[in-house]
Structure formats: structure tokens, C-alpha cells
Length: 242
Image 1 (spheres, rainbow, N blue to C red):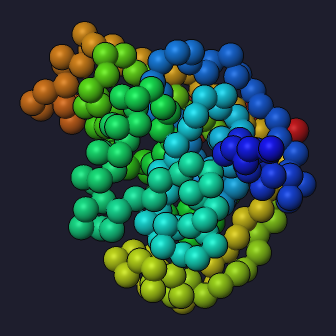
Image 2: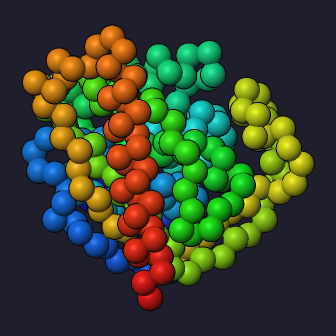
């Protein structure tokens, strides 16, 4: 009997749109260590692409509304993604869920840009500011050794289609300010993509002792910048390389 694993479902979703997928620097993917994967985010295909790229079990955090919307919620659950909580409990539940997964040696995937690039499309080489939540998670999660792996999803060919009115999504998440605007929700479909793996950032048990007081914010900011810079450089390198 065929088992519909997240990898198989991710393969099916990307094949359904005839996506041509290549990978670069996969030797940088850590081995046998809990890892947080962070990536740029422009398309609904980003999660399936990362799941196809990472050989380990990858549980990707997704927007709250995706866990509430019919059809979409079935897809994200089949991919092994975990929707974030509502605004009033989002950060607390995220830390709890992600910490539980990482301590059980599963990998966690995140899109630190948040919702904005899905509503306001950016150019293939552009990247928005990263939220620091993933960096604080990396330093605080109760495991002795952990890696943070930046990955760039570089689009080489794509098409954007208008879909449903953005305001319709308010019924599934009334706290998301991006859903208050007029217009149709864009759906970006990649045709050709190169997934480039950056250099992992390793956090050891000894380094974790430095995460305290005023130094905690500095370490989280440095890690956030490191990942954003890595992905920015990879996007510049791969996007313009035909």
C-alpha cells in the first residue's frame, strides 16, 4: 500500500505545476543534529520545495489562517506543517511547538519574512526584513547542539496569477492587517527554481551560556542578520546566473 508521506505529497505538488527544480551546495546540509531551516518566502510552493530539498523530517511553521481555511488546511497538515496560533497566543504556542519538535530531533522550517511578500510580491532577488523570533528560539531551545540553516529559493522563471479577494481571508484570521486591503491575492507559480543551501550557523552548549541579559538580544540580532545576509547573497548569485 502506497504511503502518502510529506515528501511524496511535496513531490506531487511541485510536479503538478511542472516545476523544474535544481539544488546547489546540498553538502552543507547538517547531519545528525537538530536544525532550524530559514528561507525567503514568495510562493505557496516554498514549503513543498524545502520539504523536497531536506532529507530529514521537516516541520514548517505556516500562517494561522492556513490552518483554518478549507482545503488549504488539509494540504498543510498532509505536508507536516504546523499552523501558528492566533495573534494573542502565537509566540507562546510557536515556541512550545517548535521546541517540542526540535527536542525530539525533528527539523523545523520557518519563513522569517512573515506574510508581507505573499501579499506584496517582490522581485526574485529581493528579500524583506526578517523577524527575530526564530533566532531567539535557536538560542533558547533546550538541546545541547543545534544548527540554523539558511536556504535561498531562487526563482529563474515564474508567473503571478490573481486569485481570491484578499479581504476574504479575514474570516479565517481577523488579526492579520495585510488582509484588510483591497485587491486580489496574488499566487506566484515558479517554473524554474534553484534552491541554494547556505552555511549553517552552529550553536553549541557552551555558546548557549552567552545567551543572557543584554547579550541575548545582541546574539539574536546577529543570528538574524547572518541568515538574512546568507540568503541575500545566494539569491544574488543564483537568480542572475542563467
